[in-house]
Length: 141
Image (cartoon, rainbow, N blue to C red; front, side, top):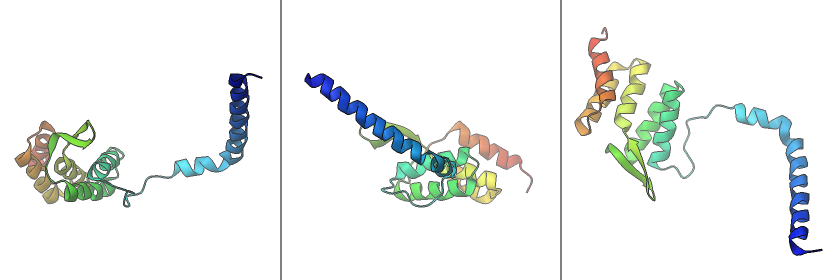
């Protein structure tokens, strides 16, 4: 038997054993994936992990969890940037004060929202922050 054929047989045997192990575990897998993410500490969490999870919470309308993550991100990196370096040559737009203000806005905490949005505008003005500030200005007290 040639070496490539022997390797192919070993690989197919391993794949078959993995498939039967996976099939046996399938009934419990949906319950694990159906769980919603919680807002606890992130293992090895860096500012950008909290910021990106906060953005996901904001999108999912989990505003209280978004507030907590944006606050954690701000503690570690308080300055907003259009190109914040996360690692290597990877950059992201980073507006935690703005996004914090938006989360507060949706929670109905208008004073906190205005403060966070104004802080964002003082650092790095954006149309998104101005839009929410305009909505707060016209909102009934």
